[in-house]
Length: 272
Ligand code: MN
Image (tube, rainbow, N blue to C red; front, top):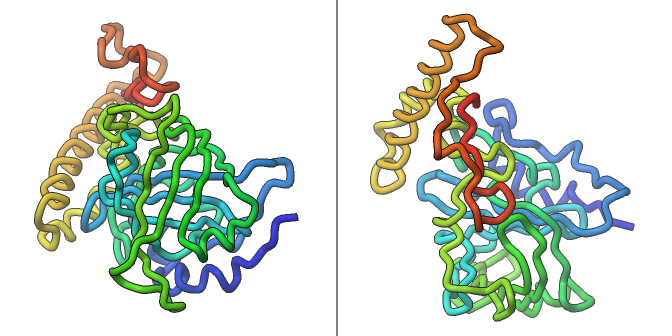
């Protein structure tokens, strides 16, 4: 039986957020489907003050979480820095959208999801020892991986370092592929950041723009511009009032590409 300990484990998660202002789940309704046998994992691409990838593994009713600045790599030579962050509620695993203000303000994309299996018996002991070997069965990430704690950096309340490395093991799924570049889109909407923002309220963003500098700020300005164009095109289509009509011209970029994991780089939803 899965143990529910979310009431205490999510204290830090809840303390950082104002649920009246953010669309993120509070975790109150985070119950696990009894039908699901394998533990869940996901990776959320998060454009906040910096672009990063949040890597999450389900364990004991919450999502253990690491922020990976460069994202996972299929190349075993790439040891990707992974900062342990606060546990997240289970229902966060499906979240995709815009956090308009406060902690983590930015855009969240569900970049990968699937199931994970530890390659040892005692997950808590492995976490304590700082070496977690596991298998992933996701849309983009597959095969054997390891998360290993290194010294240094900011510490947990128990004195353990928050600094880990995420490394792909050598197996049939390993290769010199930058999967974040090869498969940049969402596994939920099969779309990109501008499309996610266009579904939400880009106007909320205008007021925060001046505060955003650097690479993430430039990326965000570009995304807002693209989202505005998507919204304008949507408004024009609505004004034409041709609901059942779809554009006749076939665009090459809408065709699913060969050799890319299931649908990952599939159609950019022109209707989104
Ligand atoms: Mn994040």
